[in-house]
Image 1: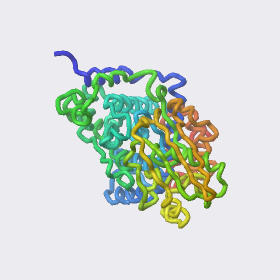
Image 2: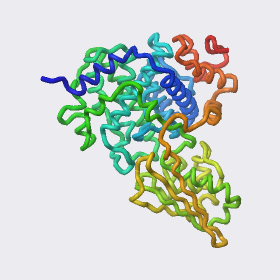
Image 3: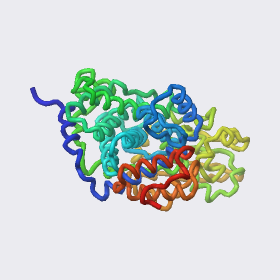
Image 4: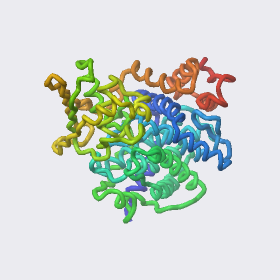
Length: 464
């Protein structure tokens, strides 16, 4: 009987375990780690993460791994769950093509395992890249490119399998064990789109990270599952996509999808489709210095039903509202973490502008991020109309879509939520040479990212 796709994929992944990342992949991976740590630290202070931390404390778990931004060490699975949610709660981590939150489901796994193994920075980066890689190919195989095609939230769907690969690399699983880990993880896939705009959405990433990590730990102990989970009848592919092209996953490997097609570092902490409206609004705002003159706003977009929210109830809900994000950009000439507080949402001036904002859907506009555009039209009190089109990804995905200076501004702002300036700069310096970090230095860096118990008394080894 010929070997199935899942088995061939697992053998390929294991064969690449010691593959050296080239300079381009290393640079992209370091950028992802820096962005993920920064966004995770900022996200750690959000209300949903505080609730998850309180829940973990109540369980009294073993103190083995760091929880970002809190004086809590817990077991590796719980740490991955909380940190994965923290990376995603702001909706500020990188975006991929096809759409996914591949970093939030893998980085927390790699960091947690680094605290119970002797893995250094190079091993962590390679495991991270491999977990992201599998998620990318699973998304390609699904043939679900546009938002209108989605039935499940992508990180909840493919994240457990990507997390399992990341964990398997650091735990040293062989191909047979990896097949079992993928089989276990696949039975934990899901994530309902109806929970977009709620606290639960962040847990899609956290639970995916935890599920994949636990799947790998179980497989290492000998726990079994269907070893052909991707191509089996009623397996992952058949269950989640009517057009699943299983052979596509065998594209796994160099130059890796974090290099080509790459990813986009987010400028704004909101659903990525809203960035097109925000970009158009901010450019138009440069010509409109008096937003109180606006009498009507029209935003023409592709089919994106789950971000058509004319009256978001909370600031969190506003992250998934094309109408709110556009109105906020027009009114404030900026969109940042503070835009999505309840107080910002409920301001009278914002609510008045939101009431004058209309969303128009054009089914002829492509739904893939690389193909889509939006058209913003603003009527003024003198009868004139200003318009601005945004198709910011016409040139494709890639880390180069944000410059180093702009990215460091974001990183410093996010890390500064809990860290003082010297600690922020130590973290940036450490990640800049992440592949050179020994395990002890990596652990020290993580300790400083939990400032209540880790700050002040030590610095990163060799990074002062």
